[in-house]
Length: 413
Image (cartoon, rainbow, N blue to C red; front, side, top):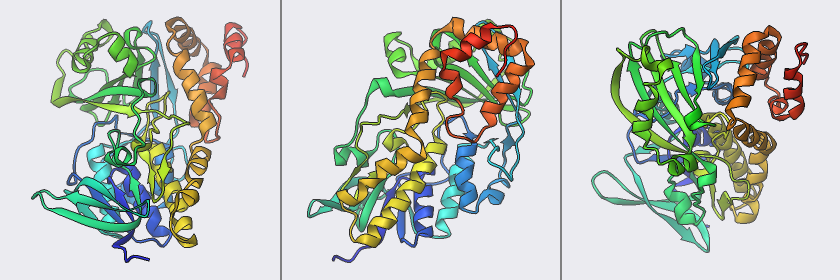
């Protein structure tokens, strides 16, 4: 057995990579965390840290520390239909339950996770992946290039690709796939002096980009994270340009007055959001993929941090077991996708793909939102779905029976 520099090397120190490294340490492994950037660094995102992500922050014993960062609990959510009709859900955020969602800039959140990792394990910043090291057909390390151009070789029993949508690790494993059917794109920009901010997160479904939407997430009394998300294939088919689309949507009548005096802070950024392909291979001998490198963004909500951290916890657990049993061969790591799709889970994501398809229909969205705006019992039912921690809680939204019930004036759950 060759001497190793670490038990596992995690390439990419975002939420997926930092979570993998921290849970690996909890399992008794010696991880090395590597990233091409230096932290703190910005990351285009809606800045929503959902309960799915905070669950793993709590398991790592970091929740109280996280809540010391600038953040805003999500107490209300405004959902607006293409018609302009909207309704507001009132949520009950509690730090001692799994019903807490917060808004926290990724600049702060990601840096917080790297700092937590740095207290427990070595972290190398400014190291870009050049290649993977292989021996006897198994991945056993990485070659990196630092900021001065010098190359370094680090060896390990396994490598984790947590390096995002373009994943150099996945490419070198031959596991990279770019499927327009399983890909969304989004913009993000920060604005000050947006009128009409109430403290609620806002989701506006707009007919030109369905099933996509525009969001307005208030980070504080003055600043909002504003972005647009839509399917990649619609972007190409309709020949949209992301920045231009973002700017044009804010001139629509419902937003024109609100953004008339708003001040853009920085630039409008765009990024890719890969959604799950259940047939895709996510492991090889000595290597697994997590987070965006594995394509785990929710196809309905566009949220990715929660599933990224879920995959990190699963990867750490599977790698720890494989290392205890010997070397992490492909056979031993074949457990990873099975465990991953149980944790995410795959059945719920398939329902979310169906909901994504339903949201293509403006009349259906207008009808459901109008019913929710009109009937308090419908809003209460939707609130219970939003706050439920049970897997499959959204399944009724994909059922035709639900919409038949909504047609009845005497709607009952």
